[in-house]
Length: 264
Image (cartoon, rainbow, N blue to C red):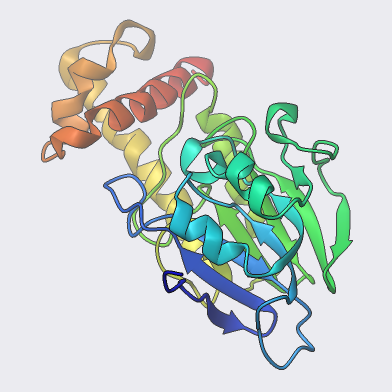
C-alpha cells in the first residue's frame, strides 16, 4: 500500500492536510481541516474527527483523510476544489455531509446560519458569509478558531463570483467576521494566521482601494458604472495581470461595477 500523507497538527484539536492541487486560484492547494477533541494528546489513525472540506476528487488525498473516523463533513462552499471529493470520500468513510446547498449534502440537512454543531468532541458554529459565492459559510470552533473557506485566503485576495456573489454581501460578511473576537484564522488556501482582525481589516481596505481605482478608471473613460464593461477597465485596474486570471478579475470587476451602480 502506498504511503499516505499525514496531517499537520497546527493547534490542540486542529490538523490540516493540503491537497496536491496547486494553481493560480488554489495557491498551494486546498486545505482540508480535521477537528478533534482538543483534550486528546495525539492525532492517530481512527481518531474521531469532523472534516472541513474534503477537497478535490484526488485519491491519495481522500485516502489519507479516511485514515480517521470521520463523524461529519462540513463544506464551506460549492466550488469543485472543495466539493469534488465528496462522493469518493463517502465510499471510503460513510460520514454525513452538510453544506448550505442541499445538492452537496449527503444524509444530512443543509447548514443553518448561527447553528451550533457538536461532534467529535468539538463545538462548531456556522456563519453565513456570502460574497465569494452566495453559499459561502465560515465556521468558528469552540469560539476560538475561525475557518474561512475562500472568504478570506491565507495570502492575496479572493474573487467574487458575480452575479452569484456580490460586493455588498462580501463587505457585509467581512464586517460580520470582524465583529467576532480576534482569533487564529484558518483559510482554505494559503498559510495560517495567528489573528483574524488584522487580515480582515486589510481585506476591507483592499476592497475600498479597488473601488477607488474603478471610480478613477470610469472618470478617465468618461463613463458611469452602468455603462462600462470589465474589459474596458482591466488595463486600468489590473495593468500587470497574469493572463490566467483575466476571467477571475473580470468577475470581480463586474461585482464592483454592480456595487457602484447600486450605490450612486
